[in-house]
Each structure stands twice: as C-alpha cells, then as structure tokens.
Image (cartoon, rainbow, N blue to C red; front, side, top):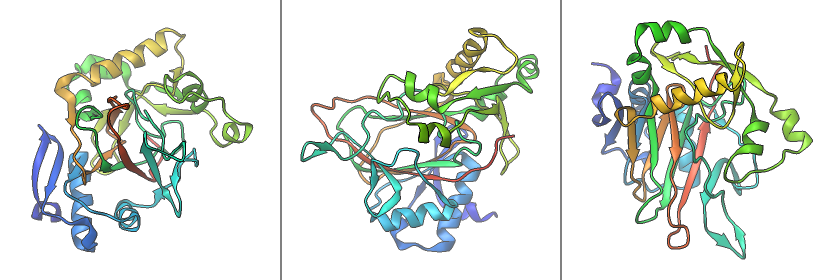
Length: 284
C-alpha cells in the first residue's frame, strides 16, 4: 500500500481528480498533507471540501506542495500575504479588492514563464448561487486518445508563448505592459507535448491567450493547430466541471491539464476566492 492509498478518496471524473474525504487542512498534520500531495501527483487534481482556513494556514498548505510562486501583477495580492492573489468582484470604498473575470478561457497558468507553475490552488470564501464554475481538462487522457499517427505528427513541435500577447489581446482585463513587466516576462518556447516529471505520462500542452504560434509553421496555420488541439482536449469526455461550495479547496496540476473559469451574474452575486501557485520546472 502506498501512502496515498491510506486516504479516503472518491474520483472527480473517470481517472482524473480525487476528492479527499475527512481531512482538515487547518490541523496541519505533516504526514496527512504529504498524503494529499501524493494523491495530487497520482490523480492530477485534488479537492478538499468544508475547509475553514486563515491566510497563514492556506500558505502553509501550499508549502506542502513546494515553494509558493509570486504573482506577476501585485495589486490584488492579499496585504501581508503576497503569495495569495484575490479573485473577487467585491468593492470596498469604491475600489475592487481582487481581480474580476480572471482566468476565463482555456489555458495553463504561467505558460509564458521559463518555469511555469506546477499547480494552482483556489480556496472558496464566497460563491455565487449559480455560475462561476471552474472547468479542468485532463490533457493526459486527451493525449492517450489521439491516434498514433497524430501523436507522431505533434511530437517535437514547440509553441511560442508571450505574456505581452496575452495581456494586450485578452477579452477581459486587457492592459498595456510597462517596460518593467515586459523585461520581467520575455517570450518563451515550450513543447506542445509535455512529459510529467512525477509519473512519466505524456500530456497535450497547448494553451490559449499566450500562444503566438508554433515554431517552424506560418500563421495562421500554427495558431489554428493549437486552437484545434485546445478544442479537442476540452471536449466533455475530458472535462471535470467544479461547482463551488464555500470552504472548497481545489488544487490542479498545470503540467497535465488546462482550466478555465466561467462567468456568473456579477450584479446579483459576490464571488471571492484566494489563489495560490507553487513553483514548477522547465517543461520537457
């Protein structure tokens, strides 16, 4: 029996994702948290419901997975806890306390960095009564379902990712970059098919938003190829849709999945979630 098998879990979808039952993260039991991390590495995503966490406890949970990653944009990080990024449509004294409509569109976080984040975690503080779901796509399953000839065609292709392209073309929260942000976030090249360092599985690793093209291909053919693979990998059979409850703590593996947020009636409901990232390594 492996250590992860000592937890009580139930699958989120087929062979992807696991809900860990009966674990109180605030107890900060190191052995139990390591079991949660092991489950994450086996299943690509973990969900723990009914949590009640202080910011310090949330950061400690992230540290069980590795070193927390900082955020490119600092204005919505939590005072005193720069590892925590606020997602919310709430305003206090006429100013937003967090980023609103962040993460809408299928993508993997920090793909514009040389070392994209290993995982993303969201902790639900307040949720709308309807809408605002988060969708996760299992890109290992998507790769496995490809015909052998298609895998061979894609093997070795590299994708051009750009933070500047993302921020100046995205639908929501578009912005021009300062010279400092441009210098801190140069364009990068990553493989289209990525090997998971923990389990050796291969995953399709396209994204939307950051992609400017495929190395060695003229546009629009390069962008069209990536867009077609995003559409293929986000078909219903590969996707888990998470409907949020207050106290949910959801962690997904950016090395083998795509994700997207979804909209809700932001005139009727308030949403607040706290996002953390954990440092990753160079894709191969």
